[in-house]
Length: 361
Figure 1 (tube, rainbow, N blue to C red):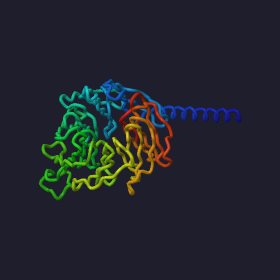
Figure 2: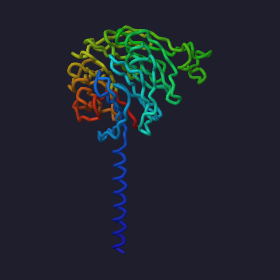
Figure 3: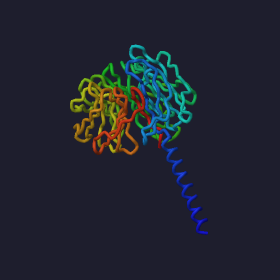
Figure 4: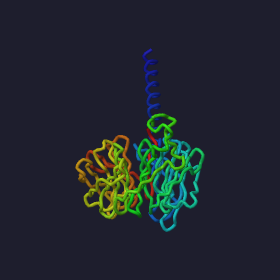
């Protein structure tokens, strides 16, 4: 009897160990992060998108996309990802790569025709919004019907990066060549006859209806590039190049209300708020390549972390404590602890990493 009990216990332990090992292996093999590898800046080479397991830092799979891709976003239902195939500015690109996330493959190479240098990406309303930098425009693509469904001109040079409020009422874009941002407002006059009852489902605006977006152009400073909406969704923070720091624009009045330096940062190409809203993070990508951490209350730089030339895209990890920065010039993604301000590891995802997007919960 003792022998049988011992045998049963041993089998149970072995079974439990096997199940645990299988679960651990499956978890380690699951991709929860996408990283764009553009290979080489201004090289106009075909790039790829890496499916990465964040916990292990391992690349599960790479999928070829178009020439010199820059950014990636994931649909809210996690079915699709869109990659902007920007191309170089000497040989402009004009395609989006649409990725089936479950199948881990490109299912559409969307021809944008005369919409050149697609770059900034945003997802809302079930659509992928994109900038066409060399065509002064913003468009929207519907992945369910594989079609461009909306297009608005900005009338400004170098429409580059995008940000939007969660309710979809405001869409903002930087215009690098014109020194402005465009604020598109889904204005109330087009909501329907009952203007005082916006909670009525029938009165919510259709973002694809003609004439519903009202553009206001706001001068902010030279070469605006990084852009992010404040956590309370009342302001737009804009990273400027040429050492001009950060401009702040009020969404309600659509006017610039503040401008402050970010230490000696010269080119704030990307901006993100930390999850707790305490810090504004910016990448100063040239010539050294730094992550600049700014205290939101005092507007003072509390830390500058040297990462390497081409430090650009910023991704806040779900734990809120760690942040990833793509360092294009060093072919790695650096992970920084926002409590210790130390680089905790570097992840090798491929050549020239840039934009990142989350697949996990």
